[in-house]
Amino acid sequence: MAIDALTKVLSKRTPKTRKGRKILEKREPQVVEDAKTALVICGNKSSLDVGNMLKDLHAVRNPLSMLFTRKHEEHPFQDTKRLEQL
Image (cartoon, rainbow, N blue to C red; front, side):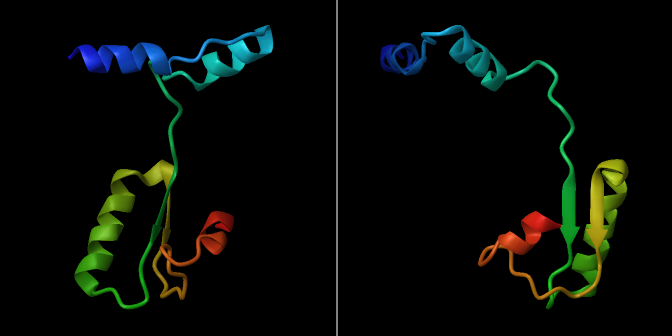
């Protein structure tokens, strides 16, 4: 318990300038954060059940998500550049 408190105190960064203080305040966790968008992509070898599950997920987050149901050649764990553009 004491180690956790010690690391919390030592890891807290203190700003030296006004600009640094504003940057650190902006990075702090907020009470209400902005909504995040989701990109729902069906893989090139996914089954019908997975496609239906992704459609349901899109229906839940409808205004904040984009659904791509076509078979895409992008593999998100190999190359993220194309997905970042979308």
